Length: 440
Image 1 (cartoon, helix red, strand yellow):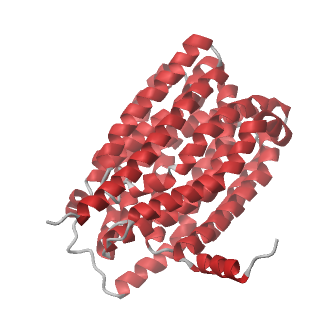
Image 2 (spheres, helix red, strand yellow):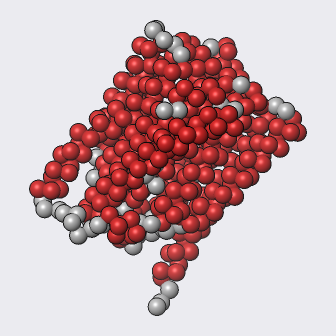
Image 3 (tube, rainbow, N blue to C red):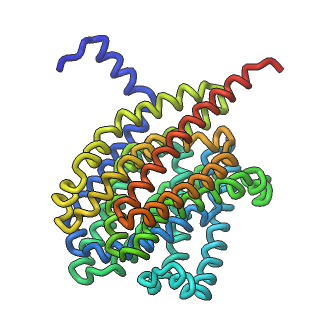
């Protein structure tokens, strides 16, 4: 196909735009990291098997619930302040909060761990409960490092580090499989993976902090208390929203484990992982770049509705093909790549691809929510959506007693909810723009 000079010039101009260029940098790094994971996956899934991945999925479900709120979501706010002094104070506040909450979680699991695993019927992860608070704290460290580097727009360094971390973690999983192909190996390596990633990113952070102190940026005037109050909407609204969302996302794993055993949870977990790759590749790339760009646009009084709509449309176009392929030939594809025993995971993935496609589209909308100060609405939305998703799971189980129908009902509820969320955020940005134009 031959391009005209005008078309070629338009493409060149598009590639020079900072948003497009930065998304490209992050996407390439994420693509390489995902390629590494996919290259290792056929070997790792065959060596460990569905049961080991099922136990890992249950462990990760608990960690997914706790990790986002380990620092009360204060790390997400690091991108927003106009001055670096506030961002440094937020980093320190996040670190102290994560340390305190991880310690409290450890004490709670020590005292009530047996009761919790018995009540949820997940005794298979009881030997690994002691790793939960460690993984929480390491996850918080990773969040702080990532958000600070997003603030500094260190997209290239972040991407390179992600690729190196993927090689090291998947290499460790593969190596451990030859000596001990059990769930404990997967869980331990996954836990230290976040810590390893945070340490690797900290090499750049050390230089960033040193540079700021050399330029005499101080935080002495910004106390921990004042910065905590200034960004109180994050622990008040975003933190419970993420907690509720994490519980909602983990419901299928917990219910499948209870009624169908850890293998079913393993099928769901591998399907979720595979379908999460486009979200990691493009979705995370867009949100990582879009979030600081939207914050800057908001501060400068730019038209953020236009920015949001264009980004969402781009996501719809880019994500359609990979999700459509899984929806059409999921069982055949999973059996081919992971082995015949993973056919059920492909059937789960056919339904999950519908939900996760629209979850993929909502990345720009979710990124802009803290910028336009709609976190209270987001909390209410999450409460209602979690109730609806849980109801869909329970209704499908009682009506059909089928694991596939449960995943189908959960996924279709997710489709409707994500369409509503995207539509509401676009409408809200237009309303804010109109209100700002009204004469005072």
